[in-house]
Length: 548
Image 1 (cartoon, helix red, strand yellow):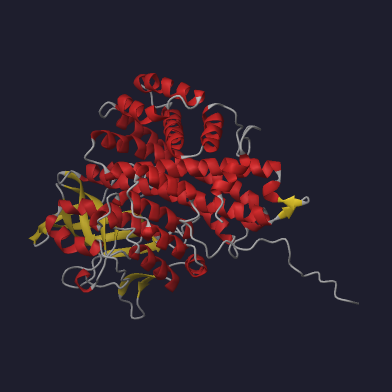
Image 2: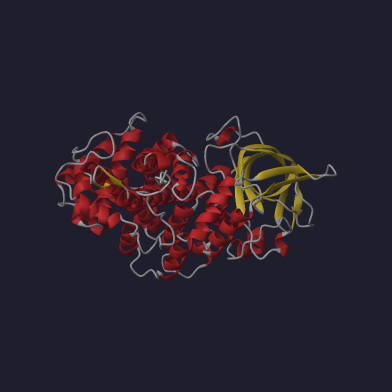
């Protein structure tokens, strides 16, 4: 019998590889033009090509397939506490460090260094977000380290270096170093005031006041970083300490890694539980000032949560559009089916709004000499972290559904969709879950004239859509009357939507602005993605979001 060709493969999309993630991301480029018009884009074009390559996508897959392994002892029984990574993890780290994603704002010459770094961080997230944990912590910890001038003098230049060296050895013998943080303990979680780790003063040396740290940390991510900022209870209260993996004399510090976390996602990154047995650490800042210092660092890592989720949204949307453009069903490409158009356009609106808000927040970090920008950073950080990250998981589920069963499979190019889905909840949890962010917004509203600052932020979009004007009119009285924590989440949501709409009104085309305001602000929307009104310009919105 003649072979019937039952294994001929057709109607399957070509994988989304070897394309430039920056050049094809019009919403990101427009957000950069609006927030930092003088920004030089050559490095972002170069990074966009690199992270869109098939080779780098292979590294991302392998780093998540061959996950980190903990070796507590060597074969002779000596304690070593080392985590072994697949070579692809190191290739990704080398690329991220080489792009300056850990230190550009502290060492670069860009006129908008935080915005430039934010765009690069988003692009790299589209490739793989797990390795960005130590990158983000290095970014946030570096300025805090300035509170110990002696340590910063030795470590600062190497924290900003574009060289990645994974070896466990003295900082003096490395061209570049990375930093992590150790805050959370099992009994307290977000309530770091409940920490029990103790710090006992031992003396002073070239790095200042030296302490012995004894206790544990329940989430200690990236334990192979060269040093960490940790919180511990000193005589004057909770304090911040610089704790290196290798001590100045070349010996290893008393950091015992108990186990690695078996996490839902973020597989390539090693998150651990550790114990300190009289580990040597140096005071950063003043005793008893650990909370203000950790809040300052948390502001920067919360920016990265918003950036990271925005990047994941963009990649998930790109995969969904790539699939539906090529996949035929019921006689025509999926992207031409009316219901699929509605879903894709709705997702595109969400992705562009997330990008707009995240890049706007980064702009505030670049302009801290401006009182309005300082106040907006205080307000936008919790709402961006809350709203963008809260939308991420729902977004990932819907984009996965666009691919059907192929999206649910952890294999091949589209296996990245399953990895994105597992990664999405992390940014919502890390550095303060939703309730913590809503409460932080309430605290921010008590700083300066928040009502006036928000009014100034929204003013340029006035008159463009009736639903936006109604929300902008209502917010001041709601903010001034907010006496209860019960409605803090709703306020965070509505402030986020108002700011997103205002940003889109200034940087996005009318089709995007009109559909966003009609759906998110005007009520012409259902309770799921894909419920935009029939008058939406679906084709224009999808075309703008296309990765090709």
